[in-house]
Length: 250
Image 1 (cartoon, rainbow, N blue to C red):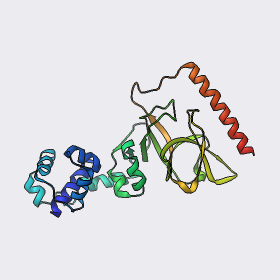
Image 2 (image 1 turned 60 degrees about the vertical axis):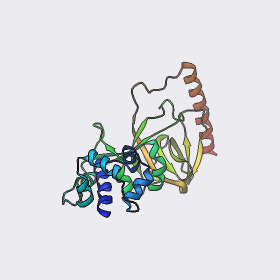
Image 3 (image 1 turned 90 degrees about the vertical axis):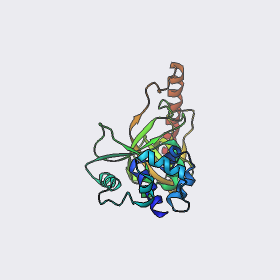
Image 4 (image 1 turned 30 degrees about the vertical axis):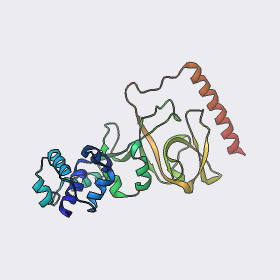
């Protein structure tokens, strides 16, 4: 059974699919696919038939041949490409993967399972893209994808810039960050939508910080705001800035 289980895992990674994506294609639960890959259960015949058709590989080969044993496998090449310093890699974290990301953000195997893409206007380097949900950062609409680079620590934070902030309590949020030189133990997270009040987060709760480099939205997805709504947002935002400046001075 171990050969077929290894083959399922290899073939999934060869396509760059997460366990959930592969399970959806097979019409089974992610937990069952996990049991297959961890050799805790034996794949049913109908599952093997689907995999055979999907990858154009015989069931006999699935059961008897280690398809990932070649010296230069597709997965190994993919890993080497990701490690190349002169190549651009953007790992994509969709909303549906947010919960898994909180548990696996520092797990190399989990990160490797994320789908990747490239953008012509971005230079070489390692980036991460997060799909956001909600209206707290309007006019950036829900469903937008924020492409970011990693920021290491409080000293690298640029005041009033937009960041993806990963915390234990809040999960993955997209906010502007305000900090004061008075204390390095806290940051203030501010929404572009003034209907949401700023709030403080302790740096001890911050797992990762990613500074926004680009925002990708679907055509026609941009939120349409009336002139009156925009005026109210500007007025409210000015009040918030004045209040925050006063707090900083105090």
